[in-house]
Amino acid sequence: MDSVLVVDQLAEAAPPRSLAAALSEVPDPRGERGKRHELAPILALAVCAMLCGARSLYAIAQWGRDHGPEMAIALGFTRPKTPCVATLHLLFKRLGRDKFEDVLGRWFRQQGLGPGEAIALDGKALRGIHGEELPSVHLVAAFAHRAGIVLAQKGGKDQGRRANPGAAGAKEP
Image (cartoon, rainbow, N blue to C red; front, side, top):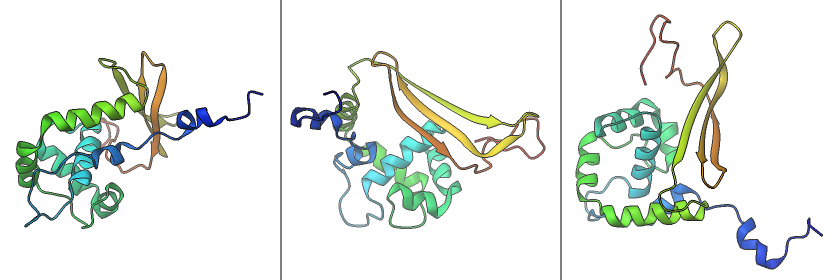
C-alpha cells in the first residue's frame, strides 16, 4: 500500500528542522559578560532583514527597530528592543565565518539542496482590481530550482512597509 508509512521512511517524513534551530548551532564569539542578546535571534534578525532588502548593518538594525517588540519576541529575543548597529558590527566582525557557513550548508542539504544550487526568493503583494493592496495578502516564497521544491512559503500581515510608489506618503522598505 502506498499510504502506509514504514519505519525507514520516518526520517524522510519528519518535518525539516527550522533555520532558527540551525542558527542556534553557530558558536557565539562573545563572552558572557555584558551580553544582552543571544546569538541565534541576532542571526535570525539579519536573515529576515536581508530577505526584506536590508543591505547594511544599519539597515538590519533599523529593520529590527521598525518592526517592534512583537517581531523581536517572534525572532527569539528576550528583550523588546533588537540590537543596535554597533552591537551588530562588533558581533559580525568576530563571528566565525567558516562555522557559520558550515551550519547553513548543513541546513540547506537537509532541505534537499546540493552544493552550488541556487535558491530563488520571490515576494508578492496581491492587489485588488484597481491596484489597491488587499489587507493581509502578502506572500514570500523560496524555491530551489534543481531540486524542484518550494523550501518555504509564507503569507504575512500588511505592515504598511511597501506601499504603491505613486501613493502619497509611500515609504521605502
